[in-house]
Length: 155
Image (cartoon, rainbow, N blue to C red; front, side):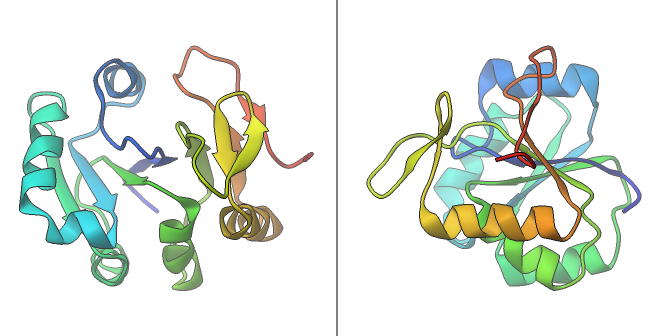
C-alpha cells in the first residue's frame, strides 16, 4: 500500500522516545490508531494527539472504519498502530495490503505468555501472528529502529 510506512503493534500506542525514534527513521505525517475502544474515547484520542510528535496528525478508528479508510488509500506517509494483532486481523481479512508488522510493546498480563523478552501474547494473539506469517506477512519484534529485529517466522 502506497504511503504505508509502518504497521506496529504496541499496547502503549504512542509514547515518547520510541515514537520519536521511529519518526526519525520513517517520517510520517499521520498515525492511524486502529482500536474500537480508543475510537470512542475522546479523552484518550486527545492524550495520543498530544503524545505524537509535533505536526503529525493522529486519528483513532474502529476496525470497521479503518478498513473503509484504508481501502480508499493513504494520501500522506502514515503509520498504522494497534494494541494487539487481533485489531490488525480485520484489516488483513479485508484485503488491506500489509507487507510487514512490527511488534513493539505487548506487555505481560493475565492470559499472556512470553514470546520474546518483554513481549507476551495470549493464544488468540498468537493465532493472529501465525495467520499473518502464513499469508506471507513479515512479522518481527523491534522496539526501536536501531535495535536488532527478532523474526517470528522461525518460532
